[in-house]
Image (tube, rainbow, N blue to C red):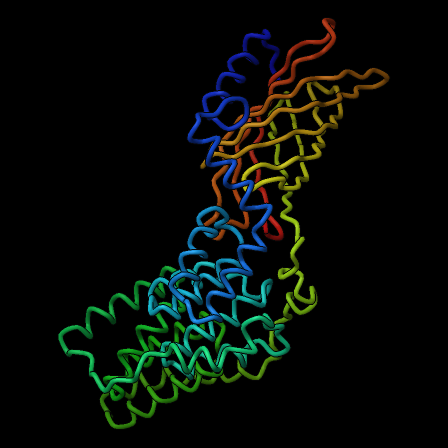
Length: 408
């Protein structure tokens, strides 16, 4: 930890001001934050209204309502699920699958994800994928507001079935796209494309194999095995493909073993629908530090989101400089603007029998994961003492944050 004049803290303060999030905001940004705060405080009312619009036969008005709410609270998983479903109801299947695919990795945390994924596939006419998802999540708690009306909604909004065949010239392009989606982890979108190809060309074994792989990656092992068995039967007709058949048979045996295993523990069931509760809080935890020959710093913080992008945190830390160990305890308010994060608060430092109070100013960068459940963070922390006998100090740390719950 180096010792710098108070001028350094002034520079940090100016950096915070420049982000327009903590100390000064433009009129446009203030209006946006005010709208966001208003939306957060009344979001459950807005969600209820959007649901009633859908159930009342106004899906496009419902879609507009959900779109506005999602734009202000993009990390709300339950809201994103409902938005994806309404997209499917209004015929926007690609957008619906994109949404649900993005949060699919969290399917064991939120019961809404597999439920609405199955409903989307049902609306698309892929009943086997819808059934496989339901089968993979036994004991799932479905959202009551829609599950009681799901059959009626499906019958009303499912597009009429057509006997159209995918043009032979388009099949290779769609097959390549499905392969790319699988490699990128967008398994549900890939499942949809493979199903489209196989519906038109059921005697081609490679799309069946691709379909099976995407299903397995999505955790739908029973259907993955059934589809792979179809591919093996297709190869029975071609003696020249005996080598390929042998490889697929080994994979088929492995899939049957997976299929017989007990379903993965469903955390959402243990939580008994906690993600659906109105007051479910949005929390975070951070751990990080820096280690060097003369300076070691380990710190953590636990925060509660007061708004969509701001959280109040309890900070804990331990530092060692040339063998002298000190402990820090404080509270800080952090605000995010895209990848920039800035914060200010109070901290106490305890070294041996002495203690001191500091004004803390923190700036840094936070790079969130695609599904917004974690981030990699880099922070510079400035500590200005209230006592003239204490030095101004600056520390650096890098670490990882995890986010829990959802904002309503």
